[in-house]
Image 1 (tube, rainbow, N blue to C red):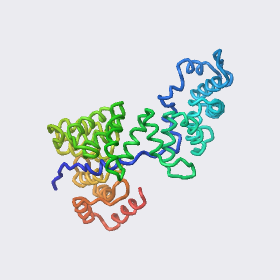
Image 2: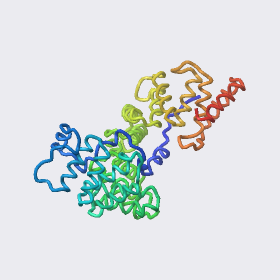
Image 3: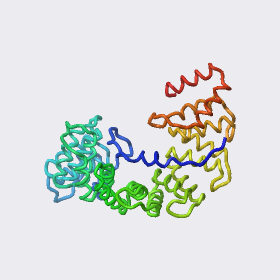
Image 4: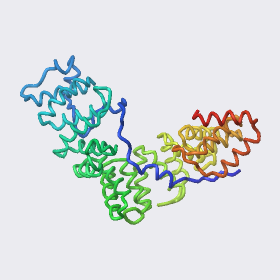
Length: 384
């Protein structure tokens, strides 16, 4: 059986079309306040380090009651004392402070104080700041509106993202570009390019990727493969996994410039090391075939397994293939059969047409006992 280096460009592009969902949990990485608010100046951080708690912290002279409440809320935020941060943020927000209103909204959104996210409460605080066109508040209202629950009364997320984008929020520019890109009105596709380019020019890796896609596909204007490759590369240099995969594809196939297996391998490695499962299998395939590097079956097998465990169907097939042949791994027909079954469907559970996989599965059924086949099928069916 011969393996052909074939990249699933269309499927990789389709996976990035939808905006990301609003977080409903409280991950550790989300506990840093957004940079655009400049919430905690250095002097407040120093005060927080020396204060036993927000309530007893020494307050600078000359602050009015609203400013004092915000100051204490900031100290509590740094200390991750969420009930106290919420208490003082709400006081300052009721006094008209926009930063405090966004603080209160974020605390409610993530359930940091109560333990239970409350989007209705979050929306009410964000709306106070949004009335004054506070960019982050506008953006967060757009994200809540994406939930599609009319109970929040926020209307279309496009309205909020448009206002936030015009107020300078970079992530909102990307979200607006996505909405316009997917609009049934062709004339809006050109605006999608404009907003994606603005986000890209301001350093957004996702903006770079989306702008590159629009150039690559000729959406909203003329196709520009040279520009697309350049923007894929810039996004890849900012550790964007999907963009790195597309840059690798273009270098491998000579799209938008010269072809180079070495450059394709470099960008494929960036994508694979970012954890992007489709690229992990493709990196393994390049190593298996010696594209841009000496053949390394052991390392190829490693990357096939990483992609397979990440849910990529093609990676699962390739891992099954090398297990069946004993290339880079000890030959194991049972494990090969297991991964050949896992390769039937993509990460969304949709069937994947792959005649080579079907042939491999049939061959493995012929060497395994019916009892072993049934046991492995039961494991796959149970999601093990």
